[in-house]
Length: 170
Image (cartoon, rainbow, N blue to C red):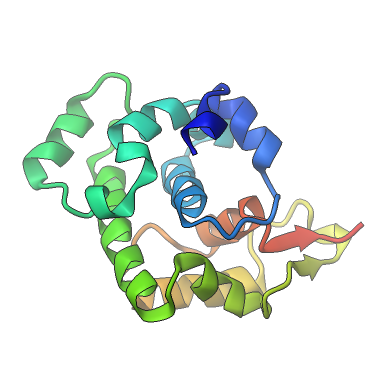
């Protein structure tokens, strides 16, 4: 993963957006960007990928799940971070929820891809500018049920598009 992220964050995100991935570490990266993107541009969130990679233990959910409140507050005070404590807490909570999903399904990818029957879920070209989808809403509801946070229908739809699970047909 670290070799992949060596490129500048925005370029990495742009280059990999929509490429189907079954890599839990990359999925955690994309979910992290999605959470931080809420209320911001994707460029603002993606530009912080190298910072996120360093602060969130190379997107290792096992390590991030163990973050304590003092560590969260230190991240919220870090001038290189997007310093929203609610979003930082969401990343830690999502790491914990991800571990539970991995325990149940074997991987976060297996859990996510089952919503699309293992194949990219194709939407019509007119969905290119849409911010939500029925699949995104269904996955968001299930993620929330599994204690993920900051995963509403818009964040989840864009996360699934970034992960290549939802694609726009040509």
